[in-house]
Length: 461
Ligand code: UDX
Image (cartoon, rainbow, N blue to C red; front, side, top):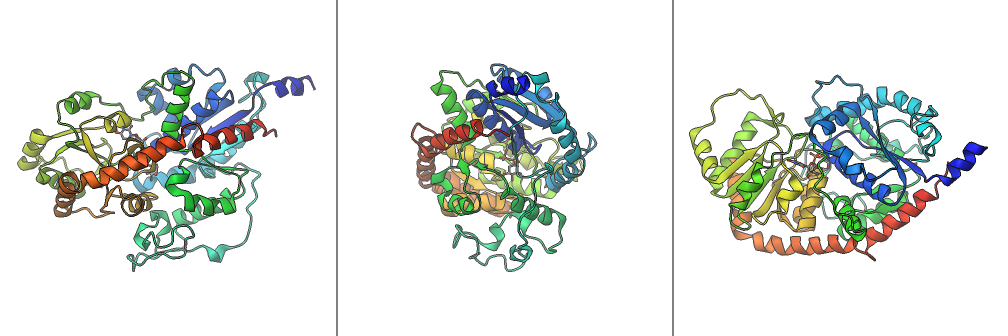
């Protein structure tokens, strides 16, 4: 009884569990900080592997030291430390978490002290997960509409898709997320995504890192299935705005899995305004040596300045052969290559003209918020849809989809840097204004976050 009385006075305790990938961890950390800022107790559950990377390269602990209610807990992802967590292999993380993580997670939730600091904080009252990455235990699957789920074969890819409510006339088959385009309906990745999507409708609420002016018609469709929906993005910018409102300086924190190489900032300082193409394909993309050369020739032959970030683990079949002399010379003359950078700072630099991106969702939002046009090459998953929206719906750039050809890349780089940049820039700046409005007092995302916090504070289980 006394425990209940004490617990009643304690703030609600939220457990946040992101998919252990860079983009997902980044946005969930922004969410964790927004909730901590509102006085909620938050435990961030990270895979041990992810936590190790953050300790080595980020400054997670100093970032959260101002929040007394913030804790980190860790869980094994069930994979050996040297397992490749990139490319299509990221699905192994999801499958392993389901198999191994589920019981570990339930043990953690059931143990009295593990998350409640021996009674100093309330037991977890709410769980925020990146989709249903693990089986939390008690969530029953609803419905038996197996046959209604559509899947697409890899043929007739240019046909428009008319059957997705909210996206009518906007996307072709080739723009559908990669996990949903399979030759075999029993494909494990496809089946997993399908099951998880359905399970999402059993959640008490849905939080989306997007905003109404960006994807209103689509959010409306999702709302029909999960009415208790909160679109509160772009999270990174929303956090910055809320910190500023409270008079707190948003320090240049890093939650990078790789060491940030800041030498690019000095190089950018010496470049003319809007003259540099920033090339970065994110945290899980893999390139073959042949693809690498196609991109490289395309960039060098375009004659444009470029800052190209290539993760050390992103090149497969690297034979270690010498780089062709013309690429070496072209790069020395106009380019700068490195392994990982503070991306948001780079995007905000006055020298950046266009972002050549894999269209990961965080990169897309970061570019939108700064108002930078994009040249899109999609690697997989949601990136194929994002790149279509960037070019055809928001009209902020070009989408070369998954084509990797030096002639095309050279042509598109020239076109976007020399011919169409101003036109795309105007749209990009308009989108940036929308993003700013939504996270300002009275804006949609701003009000939705307030509603979400109220909802979380009233959720007692
Ligand atoms: C993954 C999935 O691949 C993607 O489809 C999904 O939309 C999000 O998660 P990822 O490769 O991690 O994408 O890309 P993205 O979502 O763009 O996130 C990458 C994050 O790392 C961004 O926040 C970006 O700012 C940061 N980053 C990237 C750096 O800080 N430095 C870098 O050099 C590269």
